[in-house]
Image (tube, rainbow, N blue to C red):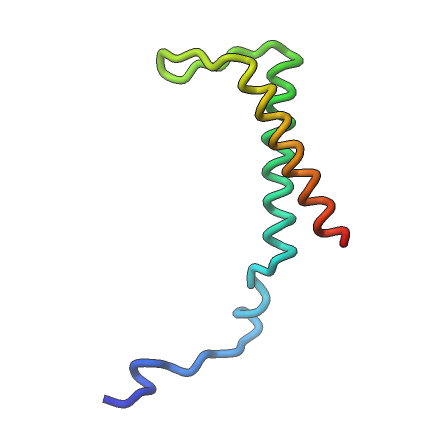
Length: 83
């Protein structure tokens, strides 16, 4: 069996490099996700929305903690890309 069958040559096409996940793309995506999480929990606190999963009511202090941590992670993501 030839080695080209086991290990085919890597193609270098435009498609392979066009959609490649780079460090900056990854940071951009994660900062948007964390910003959205922080925003939704902040809205939950401001509007007094109640969250129930199954029979368990999620306390609002959990949203306070998540707004803090998700906000810090989102801001950190914005600072990393700026450098």
